[in-house]
Length: 386
Image 1 (cartoon, rainbow, N blue to C red):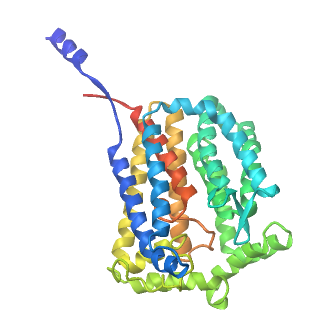
Image 2 (image 1 turned 90 degrees about the vertical axis):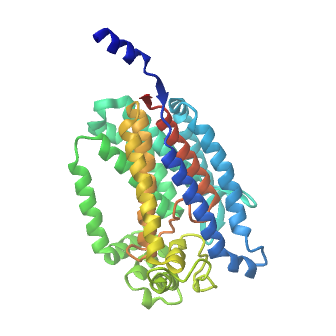
Image 3 (image 1 turned 135 degrees about the vertical axis):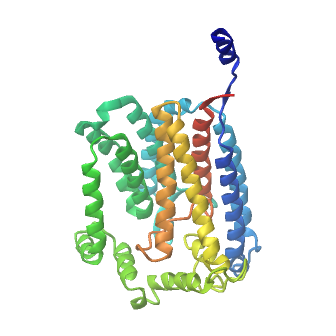
């Protein structure tokens, strides 16, 4: 009897897991994003003398290219990416130096965030995000228990803090996300939790006294004038109706007018030149206006389901390196979604953060697809018995 059971166990086949639930969620969010980009941008595109589908078409081509790359990456062994960690750090530093300190940096709306030529541009801040996730996962996996030592924290700070500061020079929102990703990954990796609790309490205190702190930082030269203005606008948008408060107020009007079920897809009023560039950071306001509270909640639930799948993959990953790759991507998506919705609803100051997979932005969707490919690659490394 025992021999028969042993034979049956030997006959069990092993198969690689692949998270199709996550794959279908990515497809749905991307397609939904293309629909909302078309709905929110078609009017302004025609005003600018472009085809109604101009922004949607550009996003679609980049999304298709990114999706193809995602599928290829998902079938690769994720351990192979660890070899490129030193190169990724070098590329990140070089690209940030080029964009901040050389004429190669392209300036738009008063901010130097892009490298490239003509319409073919890239935001180096997105390279820094994926570099941070990859390199920090390698460091945590290699250090093991040594990651709890203060000198390890110092090494990681020395490696990434200059990058974060260079990003913050012209892109405060991406700098916040980069710091957030590092904090989440280090929090999970470390047994010592009190420094993180102290940090959260400090951040809460800064937010509570934001205007006073911001004025002091601006006088000290740490904050730029436009960053101070955003904080003052956040506290009292009605006092700046023709400045930064205009976009905040129009976004709130869009959210408030949507009601429970919305005005209907394509029926937004605020996108008709009232809300500036509605296909970008404020696209969630258009979702609320056209699809109502129901549509907004469904979008939030989709992101929550995506994060849940990340957690399942991270818990089942074959090793620590794979687990922390997924944790880094989870932190990125979760932080960006929370901050975008908080900005649109005026819970925090406007920081120019896009809604993943839904807002218009070629660099953003391209690197998001790369991250999704890495997560699916980790899921494909999980071995199941059948």
